[in-house]
Image (cartoon, rainbow, N blue to C red; front, side, top):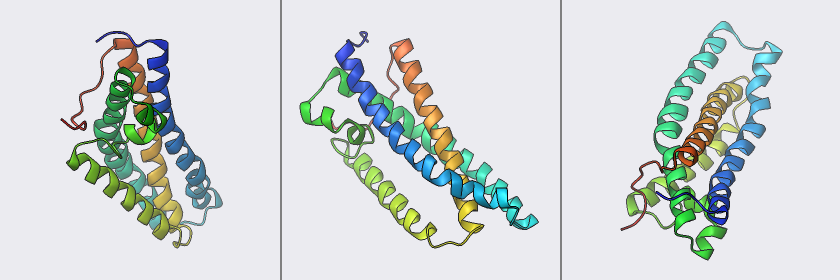
Length: 173
């Protein structure tokens, strides 16, 4: 694989960077809510155990399995593909392209839109939970998102330094 030109690198950075900004924004908004019950000491021993158990579960399920093993390599692979085969509209919408929200195999489109719909539904429902329950849920989400952002940055940097794109099968034939 050939090294990226400065304009191609800018396209890849825009795609991956846009996704990082979205994830970072979610972390920024949820972190205070996740820390609130921990800092104010309002949780029972059971709730505290649930807090840490849920956080560990989400680190594995959302962070490792969801982001590191699936989402992050796909985002980086699609970003590097777009950098090498730019289309003006795709470049403008690069973060959405990288998340496989369009121009992807049918299976990947359905999965991407279904996950997006589930995330929106979960956000809506969790807003109605009182503390400390909302904080417990948000703590797990925050740790998964932090892991996800770290894996996305690491996979992107490794792909650029090694000049190889992660394998993904999300592009249409």
